[in-house]
Image 1 (cartoon, helix red, strand yellow):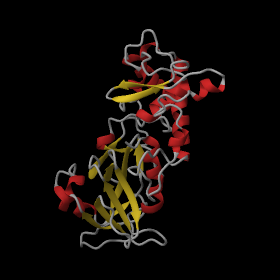
Image 2 (cartoon, one colour; image 1 turned 45 degrees about the vertical axis):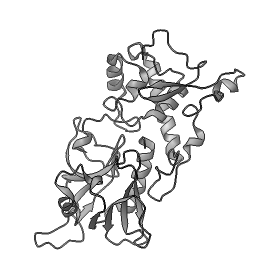
Image 3 (tube, one colour; image 1 turned 180 degrees about the vertical axis):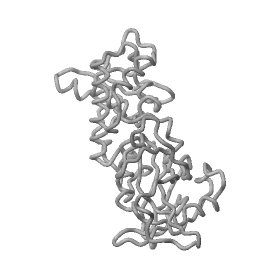
Image 4 (cartoon, helix red, strand yellow; image 1 turned 90 degrees about the vertical axis):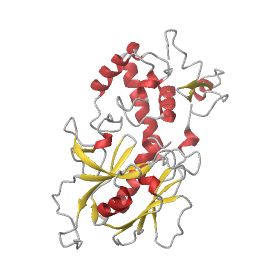
Length: 325
């Protein structure tokens, strides 16, 4: 499933292609991919056609496009929205396990798992269509209301940050790459959790955007075991694991994300290559690179964790004696 770096790669790609353009027509190829839009395909298309994309915003793994209505009462479409318009609605994109947002020229054949097609106003040198492709149909698109943020800060990473957030993302905490992320709030709530460290890192209400892959990578880099009780975590250790998460995800962004198969690609259809730099995830039975660098012999191990897998080094990430998770 795409995690924060993969969704941020998609956000940055979309900004270049769709920001400022108007949605001229909408084709719902498979209604299952807009099932979260309760009023159905006709209402979905009718509300999108004539809307201008103001920005592309991300918080954690959530992605949305704030919209401005450019349709006059006569039904004609103006060339632009009012420059000071405050958006009230947004197009929410949930990628799920295999959702892709692809920019394509009109002449490019449809993808096998094409679900929704948005045609955009002409722009020099830019593709005409934004396509939502989803093999497993766990993701989808839907319209949502924008609401004020609880702390008055920006809703998420955007080109023009506004103190608005998609309603469905309002319960999601800020992520470690967000300039408005509060370590003090995170640490206070982390210590009160009384759970295992990795379980806490995966809690999107505590800190967003960290999924299974990057949690394992951050914990390896911070030399901490996933079962470490959060109520025993010292301040320096909490700083260490957050810094590790930021470093890992920043490196992943530079590499275009992590692609284990063709299900995650960016808006140009290209795969990321951060999987070549993974130090923990998926390396069961392989030597720990950190231990090997100092002459120690240690093999990465895999353990079951919350119906997933966790990868750790038994030497430099020893299981805590009081670890309960």
